Image (cartoon, rainbow, N blue to C red):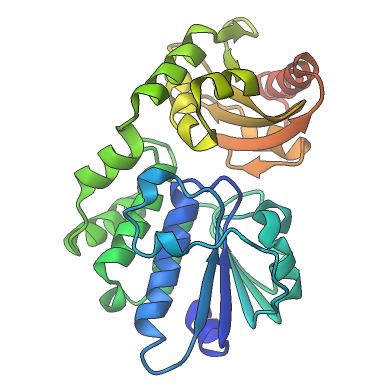
Amino acid sequence: MVLADAVMAAESIAIGGHIRPDGDCAGSCFALYNYIQENFNRDFSKDVVVYMQDVPESFAFLKNSEKAVADCSEDIRYDLFIVLDCSSPDRLGDAEKYFHSAKHTLCFDHHITNDGKFAEQTVVKADYSSTCEVLFDEMEPEKISLPVAEALYLGIVHDTGVFKHSNTSERTMCIAGKLLSMGVASEKIIDGTFYEKSYIENQILGRCLMESMMVLDGRVILSTLSRRIMELYGVVPANLSGIIDQLRVTRGVEVAVFIYETEPQEYKISMRANGAADVSKVAMFFGGGGHKKAAGCNMRGQLHDVINNLLAGIEHQLDGNA
């Protein structure tokens, strides 16, 4: 296996995922961290670090999640840097410098926008539901502990929208079933990390729905959120999960768009498609990436310009253009 060979040859290993980690990113990172610690550090000395900023509070149940390192100020050269759920090195945030300085690099991903060229070795399976599903193939089932299984299950649940997105395959369900047989408490993970929200999170969700707009003849629903309103409610990006999914299930909508301000005139865009539109192509045009039905990017400028440029790309897709 690619993973086992790479880990065995390294003494110092860094693990990193994309900025603003979601369930698949955090799940794959801590699944791998725990798998290495449990199976490679018994007879061999491996120094393993997970670089991750702003781990969502709801993911705190993941074993060793408190060991995530956000400070990247030290000058360290790792034997191996493993990238997870990330289609380009600039998405690693501050940890990107460790990727470039590492002696060897390895990437596991499932994003169709990953060209497989930025790491020394890359395993990209675009037909897989999640990076956690890709990672499962690299692990020996009998060596997967309950904490590793919980982390893998978290990633699969989140990237399939609790098994309802079109990326859910028979293989996905079989793997999820195997993880359940290892003792994973499905209801606890799904409710605790996907559906359960704080009162403030429900308030901000309600505001985003109330202020949303139907555009392009009702084919697109769009909602925006400014930094001022986020500060007013006391919310951070981790509190905004689920907004785009609720927008997506609006009857008759083909594409849902959620835009929130990260810095003055800088925006994070999330897109979801119900129909034939390929939102990954729109995201790629603006320097982002993702999947055909779920993608995102970052944009800068006046909000109305960002919206107009984005909608032009979406309309191009809705009209059946490649």
